[in-house]
Amino acid sequence: MIRILTVSKIILVGGVAALTAPVQAQNVEELARMLAEPQAPATACEARLPDGSCADLPETRQMVLGRPAQAAARTVQVIRKDIQMSFLLGSADLTDRARSTLDRFAAELVRIGRYRPFVIEGHTDSSGDRATNMALSQARAEAVVNYLAAKGIDRARLVAQGFGYDKPLSGRSAGDPANRRVEVVAR
Image (cartoon, rainbow, N blue to C red; front, top):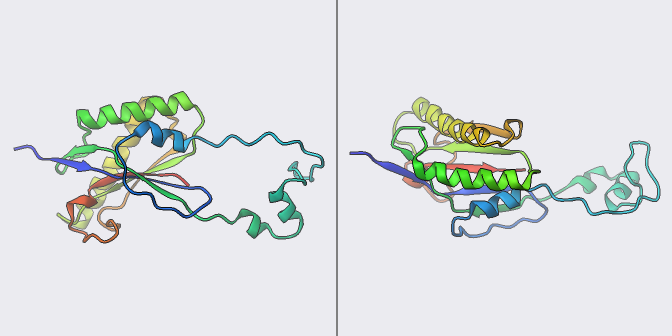
């Protein structure tokens, strides 16, 4: 009997306000658009600082006033999107369904062209020993990174990281099968 695991969460982290959105229907194209690098608004620069930045922008005004920490301070926005990443039990091989999902995700990232670097995090439940789960979670994250890179996504903007069962979902025990997941995290 072949058992297929369904990994059902993608997390995007980054932004300016603290927010947790509920899990929504799978839409990897929307996730790709969220990863797009924001376009800086066109502003006239009346006076430049020695480092080339504009002295008349609010962020640089804070720096000039000696408050760089306040200018750079940001809170974290967490957005959750449902995505189906399937693996055979105990395997890092992507299923046809997972490849189809990643094809759509990669196509949208290629269309966008400029996107933030992101981490592919692999997670497992606690069935099996720690070393096996660490290796499996890393292998699953690397399988996703390798697949995206083969589809034209800049490997320099991707990092694979496995956590085994060390980071269970909030409110879930480490043994809960829902912890078998791959997450995309952008800061």
